[in-house]
View 1 (cartoon, helix red, strand yellow):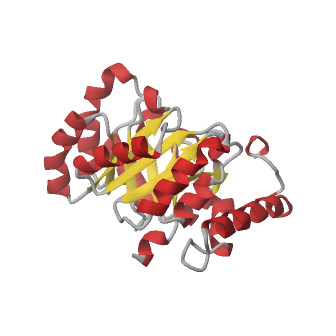
View 2 (cartoon, helix red, strand yellow):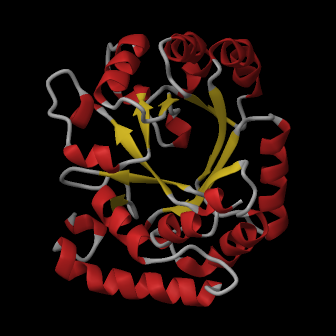
Length: 267
């Protein structure tokens, strides 16, 4: 189980850093996985983008995502059903993972034969714009995601302040050792530290950015995350939750001298 406590940084491939005329930032090479956000590319072909990514980053697992507007993406919600051929083309071209939403079981069913044929994996994701009301509600989401029988689950929700943090940490304490839990953290400024302690508590994937500004409140630069994970040990019997949070808060205070900015807006 120790391998699932090792944080994995997911870098985003978007038009700003992976468009036809874009210079690929070297920071992306620090990532463990790459997510191709196809919903942000206009007029592109999935297979061509996947092939370019495979050539540019040999050996790095590639996650293919077509994020809907309701989940914070750019793909129209009304055209959700039109995404299947895009996923199929990307998987046939060599994408390692497909990200399909918990509330799109029809898409998951259609993808299964393609996943079986290509040997690719399925990430079942769920994005909420408010925190679950209780630990029981969080557990219900988890059970629903497991019923889709994916290879990994991503559960994230928006948290504007840290008042609902207890539900998140309780869930991580119960399920952080489960290899099916790929990612679990909170979006928004209130969830900022959760993008670090989620992976350190056994939900290994966390998403970082490179460039002049964070795509969303609470996100960290890839180099910052790599620095954090090199200095702070994952949660274990000797490193309790309070100690882990204290270590992260101390790291955050000290990071200004290393990275030259204090908040995500200044990044």
